[in-house]
Length: 294
Image 1 (cartoon, rainbow, N blue to C red):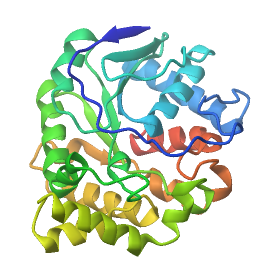
Image 2: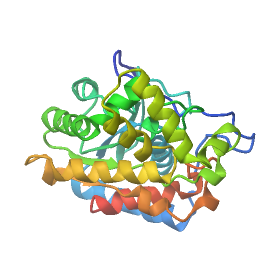
Image 3: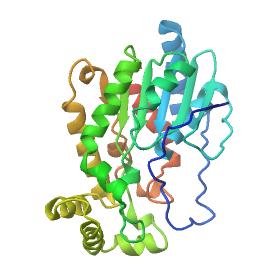
Image 4: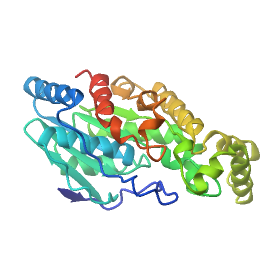
């Protein structure tokens, strides 16, 4: 099921060289897996205690995979895996779950009011963002809008959280840092650039300075700290933690960090492209449930 929204905004694509045929981006899960059985039981228990769980997932392909897995658990079927679009929210529902996913990787605060007018009030809003801001300059170049969002990353995330806190005051908010990134699983030009991150950072800084993005010290820091490697992922994770800690009450007390970076660290064998971990989707959902006390 799709509902349309104009103005959600994209926030940049993952991009990169075409993956090998074995790296497809469809998601599925084995309902006989012990983790799946546990998740189904916990979802049913939560529904019998508190009613149907209404869950909004907002972000990019990292959280989208968990949306697909959750829908399979709740309904026994995967939703139509159409190409995500910032104007459409996908949804699935059962007696225990009403879940929607909106492609919006850029912490776009304007989506909050729209979604709550189109769907039941959420119990939890689960979102991610940040990985689309990482660069492998010049193969995946740092662009002016990416730089600006990184420069004001914490303020943008806090504004996003506060918008949701106002639009859905009864909802718990769960933010996901990026998965661990494994550059050794990249292919084509990305892998070559990732082998020399300091050169990539210098090229990034040269281009940003030429465009007048910011003073030299700020430009050098952003380009060094946010490559599309695990260094960049960990720095996004740190910025998320700091932003959440700096939130005012009551938003701070109802915002949780679901540390999928820690869960995926050390599991490069489980990713085909260095950033998506299809075999770990059930474990990621397990962590999301556990963080929320289910």
